[in-house]
Amino acid sequence: MIGLSPPEISALVAAALLVGFSKTAISGVSAISVALFASVLPARESTGALLPLLLVGDVLAVRAYRRHTDWPVLLRLLPSVAVGVLVGVGSGEPATSHS
Image (cartoon, rainbow, N blue to C red; front, side):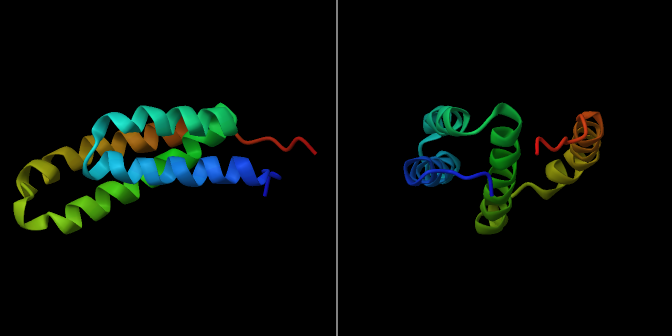
């Protein structure tokens, strides 16, 4: 762990909850969660922490609303999304240790 203080951990927990709210009810609140993550963590780590939260939120939303999901549209988008994720992973700089 990178040694976060209790207030920083509290801010990240609050930001994670705001990510959940942004996925379900209040879309504008996501800007606050991004700002909280960016204020506590460096840019790369902030992005690395937020992306899985957003992906899990999307998966849970699709699961919860699967009866209303337009599966043909999602399946049509899947190849380009997968390519985009792979390009993003491949274009990142290798992590370096600052020990």
